[in-house]
Length: 81
Image 1 (cartoon, one colour):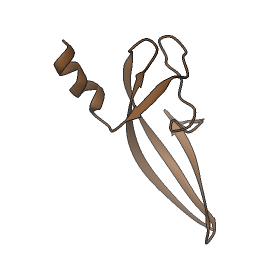
Image 2 (cartoon, one colour; image 1 turned 90 degrees about the vertical axis):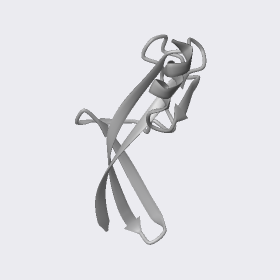
Image 3 (tube, rainbow, N blue to C red; image 1 turned 30 degrees about the vertical axis):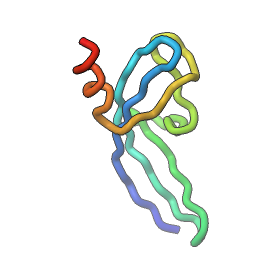
Image 4 (cartoon, one colour; image 1 turned 120 degrees about the horizontal axis):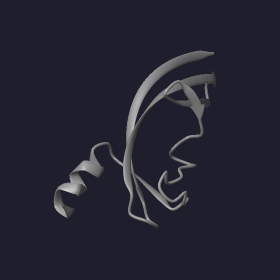
């Protein structure tokens, strides 16, 4: 069994209210078998659900959230301000 730590940033936008935010995650990747990879996500030291599967808007609590590449929220704000 192998374990690897990675750090990833994601941008999010709520499709219900338009709120945008970014977050950085520490991810622990565990290889249990040759074919099985398990990922545990941590945000500020706390284990959380994968943001790729279960994101909620911190503004309106909607589940209609799109995940974007890091930096996309700030890039979009340049054109809307």
